[in-house]
Image (cartoon, each protein chain N blue to C red):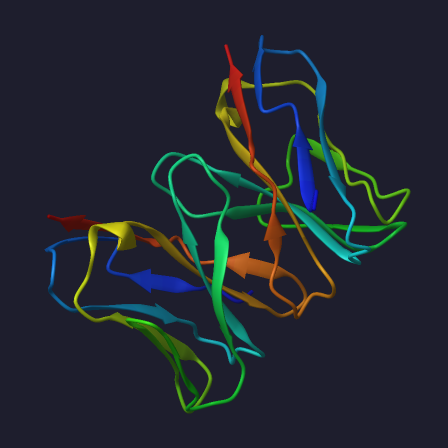
Length: 112
Length: 108
């Protein structure tokens, strides 16, 4: 049971670099989302999608882009990395917006 | 914009003691989930509550949903070191959001 798979698990970037965090789920879930978690904090919603072709902004969308070309994949792009984006990023999916979410193991991102 | 407020932010108690943590909102919840997160891992679902006044039990954990569906509590009886972790509540309106969490530490 793969569930929600995030890659990479760890990444170090230099300020100004761009990169894509990958997220894939094999449960045919319609709802997918990206969160960031800073030390000792809860989860803040970056972007979410209620289905293929549909995305919307969460609480902290600035500096991030997403797309949802398929049901399975929901990549998160950092356009120009900044030290303030150092965080742990979690991808999650659920059948619908009202169902509990399944989380990936996270990507630990450091921006130097 | 719906906000979820969790209290207390931190809690450190002795093994065997009881505790209660809270999740509150100014808006009515359609449903509410409680998750526990351990270091280095993603959150894991504990329970979903849907109906106002609902009470659910999971071994030593008791979850209560307020009658007006604007608040919820998690009560742990006889806390064990394995209960240590970050407890998060979550709800959805147009999107799924989380509270800031209660970090629980149980001292042996």
